[in-house]
Every structure is written in structure tokens, then in C-alpha cells.
Length: 88
Image (tube, rainbow, N blue to C red; front, side):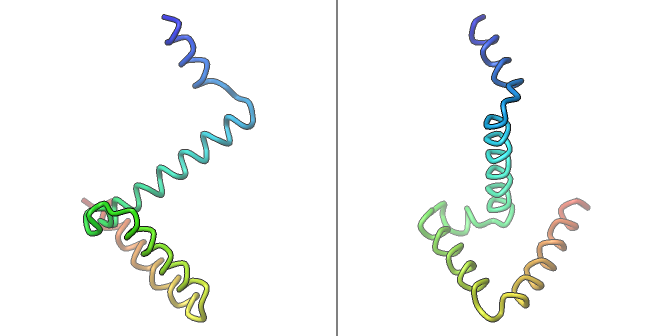
């Protein structure tokens, strides 16, 4: 019973640092969901070094001269994927 009370208190804790930690955790979970939705986990055989390398390549692209073109292209593809997913 004590565990239930403690769990309930943790869920309703409104201290600023707790709320910020919850928001950060939610954000990270959502980003992980995007990695999964894109099929990257399966395509990379769940190899985190491969995934990190791919993310570093994307980051390098975004630091380059083609940043705006890449963002426009990826945003368009992402929106289409979200729309296709919502229709199914």
C-alpha cells in the first residue's frame, strides 16, 4: 500500500524541477518514437552506433550550406508521412 501512495505522490508532484524532468522525458520518448516510426531501428538492426552515426551525418548536413534545402525537403517528407499515417 505504501508503494501506491508514493507512486501517487510522484505523479502529482508539481515542483518545478520535477515538472521539467517529466517534460524532458516526454520529449525524449517522442523523439524515440520518431526514430521507430521512420523504420530506422529495424534498418540499422538496432545498432546504436549506426543510428548515432546517421544522426551525426544529418547534423553535419544541417551545419552546411544546404541547410535550408535539406530542412525544406525533410519537412515536406515528414509532413507527408504524418498525413499518410493519420489516414490509415
